[in-house]
Length: 425
Image (cartoon, rainbow, N blue to C red):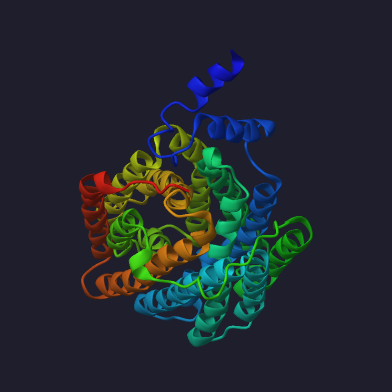
């Protein structure tokens, strides 16, 4: 009787998107999940801690880099868009390459360690910047690291999670990752106050938590040995990708064209009159909401299916960006930033869990790489377009454009989403 209650209460609604399986296979997997009260493996937990410390480091500097560029180095907003676009596109290209290589060699951890190491070193380079090309170089190194690690790390999370709790695992990881994005800016606020706006010193201090993340990763994350795939049989072929994955990729591509770097939200807050400290505090509020809702969003997606959760996220993004563009009062920002955090919680981890159920496990690194490369390249163009729209049309233009692209994506998700079917893994 207890087993029957578990089946009817905690797994109801899941069969619409889980791979086909016999009742016996389902029960075996369910028992594995129930051995861990929270459904989170040790690897997922430690990788969450790694992301927490790395994000503390990254988010100590991220909200003040655009302010550093425009206020200290006195560069135009279009240059900020160019820097962010190049940085993100660098990460995107490498996400595919590293994901494919991690699938080919069936090794995830080496790529993850290397990626986090590059990001840590970038903090030192940024502290030495006295011109915008050097900031570009530092951001390039940071995003090079992100591109090297992300696909392999996400594949490692998928491999360390049972299918029934993929949403929970990715949501938990995003929650700890984003909790770091709450702590990091708070440390930055204290540093701005006590170090009298010495931005370069803050950049240097950010190396410390990044180094802690690397130590945790090296000593505590264990990767299971897997059989190597024959080089003659392992290759990338666009035609062999699942049609359902291609449909979701197309929808995500259109959405990403309007989703520029969050640096523009920070600049918009400053444009509406918030001080540096208040801008950082608003960014903290966004990340706090993001962290708070990430795990619940993952759990809900496991119960009702990720399609509904993702569609809600698209529509929420559209509304938030529209109000970012239309508002003339900084008071509304204290509502918009946390709602934007809810959008992120509904899409980031849930989207990855969704993809992991579309693709066979041995090819998840490549699939994540294709997806993240596509999204990142779009971010380059989105950030470049946003910078040009801001400079030559007006500060509201990039946000209205982003809102429109999100509505189109949501419409396509409703129409084309009916053709998406999860693969038999």
